[in-house]
Amino acid sequence: MGMHVTAEVYDIFESTFKSKDNAKKVMNALEEVIVTTVHNSWYKTKEELKGEVLSHFATKQDLEQVHNQLSSEIQNVRVELLGKFDALYEKTEKDKAELLGIIKQDKAELIGMMKQDKAELLGILQQNKAELLGIIKSNKEELLGKIESLYEKTEKDKAELIGMIKQDKAELLGILQQNKAELLGIIRSNKEELLGKIEALYQKTEKDKAEMLLKFEKMDKKFSIYFTLLLFTIIFLNQNALEFIAKIIGLVK
Image (cartoon, rainbow, N blue to C red; front, top):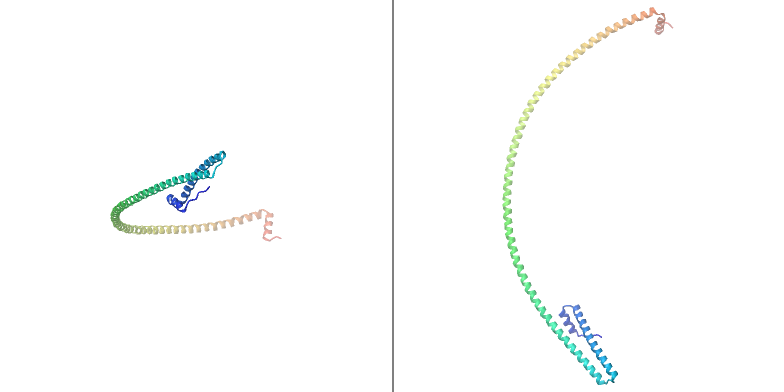
């Protein structure tokens, strides 16, 4: 058994509970309560009526009386539920107004706190900015002074090093020139000495060569004499040797 409500009542439910789904849930719950209540009342009356009819024959007036009683009970239930709905709506509106007031108050307080915190933070930032700029400026001047001092020292060291290099260069050139002269003298002296030794060795070699050639000539003469003597000795002492030699030189065929 269904229950139908007007569009106005549905709109009130929806605006009260701020959601169409919540409104439907509440209406469905109320519908179940009303239907259950009516069903129970009707069932009870029906049973009573059935018992009465079974014991007596009910008249039309009796049926109308029962109908009127049921209608009265339904109306009472409806009035009671509407009263509860009105009280719930009024409480909801009151709670809504209180919540809106609290939200507005909290919003105003939060905005005030945010503005105050913003002003404090801006002040701190400005102070820190000034301090940092002062530190940066001080460090910059100090660094520029150190750089200038370092540059001057570097230039001074550079001039000193260039002077030392020039002085060392002159000393080294003098030493090189002196060593060069000494080395050239030593080389010339050694060259003349070596040339003299080479010349003496060459002359000695030529002398030794002449002596050796003379010795070889004497030895050659001696060898020729010894060979001739040996040949004559063999010839005169051995006839066969004489014939052999004659064959060799082509005297005897």
